[in-house]
Image (cartoon, rainbow, N blue to C red):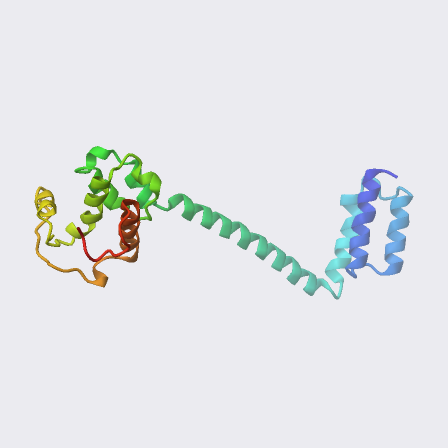
Length: 202
């Protein structure tokens, strides 16, 4: 038996199992295949007659519905995957852009890290080579950005060098910062070895 005959028999078996062919029709078509009568005509007259049977079968409507559903699911899958990939390719990762931006665009490393701290969580890798004094300035940078008036004279003097710092408020509230900023301030304090209270800059 050739591979072509095997393929033909498998096709006939599927048509029989789906109810398109009766037992007698299946037996007759199977005999034709085994006798070589269907040789080189699998995609021709033999299967044209089978498709005609499908067309005239009582199951044609359910089969058409099933085919339509399969085609619909395949199209939906392809479209969904394409849209998701397009969105992923088009998404702008603010933190990634900031981190790849030339450092010269920022006034200093504190401003750069502060901007990053408003877009994602800090990691220890962000602060490689930083000392406690640097960490203290960055932690208080978040407060300075709200124009907080520091009790510590050195901090007031330090942030006065920035044109954006006005020093207007003596207190901050819970809603002064986003949750992300609060978490990042706490992270810096942790690196400094300080307590986990962010409301009292020092």
